[in-house]
Each structure stands twice: as structure tokens, then as C-alpha cells.
Length: 120
Image 1 (spheres, rainbow, N blue to C red):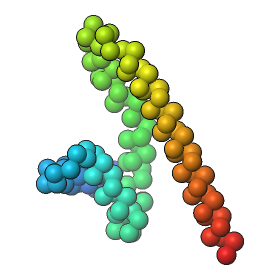
Image 2: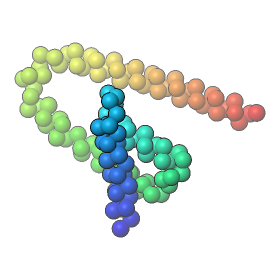
Image 3: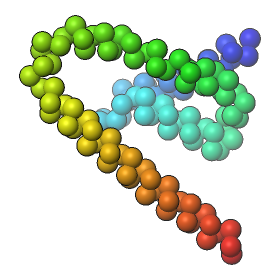
Image 4: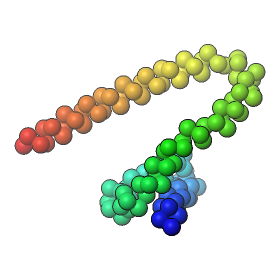
């Protein structure tokens, strides 16, 4: 029964993200709204980690399986995608490197800031 409750919380937040996406005229995906709502709920204590942790971990564990239909769809349209394959690969590699670099620098900055706060 706890998995049903946790799933309802997660899917309710997802639905709230969809509602925000419909109401707000911003070019932000509904999933991002949902993630921010969940983060806000966790940070404020409105949602306890125990209320969503096990189902969230399960969803993370099966996430690679969710990409199978997408990959199959891409393989079916290979002839269409063949013309733009090189630019897509280059953009994907460069954007991945950029995201990794920015994430690393932000993490270093936050670690340094947390260290300064602990010394005071």
C-alpha cells in the first residue's frame, strides 16, 4: 500500500507540473515544473523523503528500460536521420562535455562555499 501512496504523490506532482505547463506561457517542459515542485516540497518539508524515496528509487532503476521504445523508433527512421547524423552526434558530444564541465565547476564552487561556511 505504501508504494501506491508514493506513486500517487509522484504522479500528483507530475500532474501539477502538467497543469502549470498548460497555464503558464513559458517554454518550460511540464516535467521540469514537476521536478521543481517536488524539490520545493522536499526542501520545505511539505513532502518527506520517506514519502517518495522507494518508488523514486524504483523509477530510477527502470529508467534505462524507458528509453528502449525511443531507440527503436530512431532505428526505424534511420534513413531519414542519416542525413543529419553527424551534426546531431557532434552537438550531442559537445553539449555533454559542456554540461559536465559546468556541473563540475558549480559543484566545486558549492563545495568551496560550504567549506568556508563551516570554518566560520
